[in-house]
Image (cartoon, rainbow, N blue to C red; front, side, top):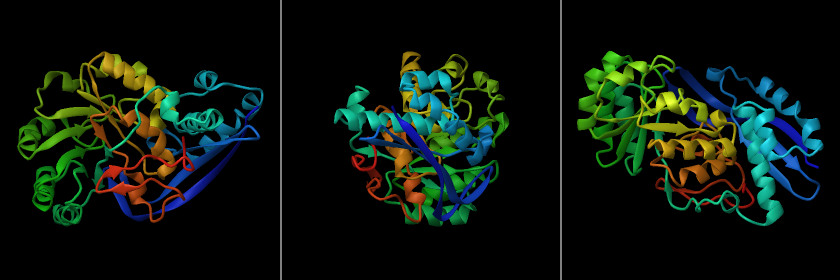
Length: 326
């Protein structure tokens, strides 16, 4: 029966990662190893304070499942034993990796999904002054897709600056809940004219009912508002897309279910990430194979990634090495 071990790790970033809620210079992750004595599966999660998670609490939640795992708890049973969130994500992904190794198949084959080949990920420009974002855009101008972290200040100035710095890149923006409905109504048309394809979580989660009454020319994507399938009925009336993150859905199992539920109601999907290593990105790639927008550039923010980490070539992600995951 599987035995589990869990450790916390700190990965320095190559620079400060700034969003509307603050900045970080390190990624604090939790790594799970699930072994049956012959094979070992790995998973990684990023506890997120926005959802009341800490490294210590996530580790405690995972360790609380050790006895059940040693008695043979299945991946399916795991979904009921743990709530959706970072802790379940790490265990669930370790299960998928273990199963792939046991059966000698890739995880996407076990999931009956297509291989996540040729995925183009967004590359994120951290929140900064318009001038600084213009310079960052110039340095990243070869990227096919750029994601701008914004708050409620200097929004149009920042987007114009990035457009000047990267005139041929596709653009998406992420407000991380920092806008008002009035700001969105005022600037939606101009963002569309600047070529912005999608606005991610403009309003605070739980305060986004106002989206029902506006007609924004840019696609609107839920992030902090969407966690599991249970959120779909309300959000389908408000948003065009949802951002699926495994740390919110509680793993690849929940993420696949959420993607299928979104498709049934005609919502498009984005697949995103917290700031983590390639071990956290690899499982998300399976969901991303069917996504309109992929945002899995976490490893590009690492000062140094894991051994056998993902390869990135001008925004194109290489398939994960078997030695990494899946």
